[in-house]
Image 1 (cartoon, rainbow, N blue to C red):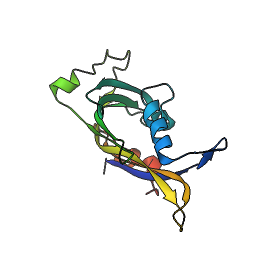
Image 2 (image 1 turned 60 degrees about the vertical axis):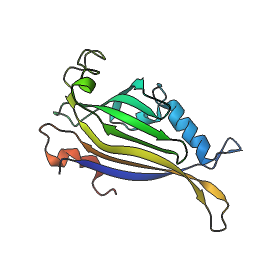
Image 3 (image 1 turned 45 degrees about the horizontal axis):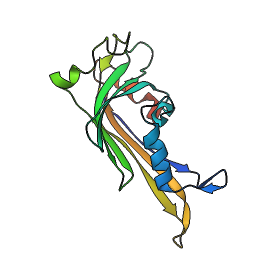
Image 4 (image 1 turned 120 degrees about the vertical axis):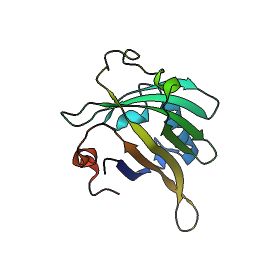
Length: 168
């Protein structure tokens, strides 16, 4: 398949500089970093650029992102609508397209990115969850991230999932 499907979990420290960090603290840090030069999404080595194009309401926003592709394949850009749920500490995005959204990002929008191919995010998101030990006491937190992306264009299937073989 040319779809990239990926899921991973990371344990987050329960204490930083002697201060206990709860899931809500990690959530605020993650959401607060988005759209800045310190955005945690830039920790994904394939993400080279990310901009918030607009805020629809308190929970919904529109984003543009550029991802590197393997050598010889054009890099991809994605326009998505994101939804942040503070109650469940969950963030999800899905591609949007059509003339109205395509007009938001043209080759000149962010400089010389004219060789980009528009990809499609079928589903991307993350959730931050508290972790407790057997007796219900705070043990820390974890972040679960998941993505299902179609890079579109003419790409050999092997290259699409090259870096995620054996992960699940």
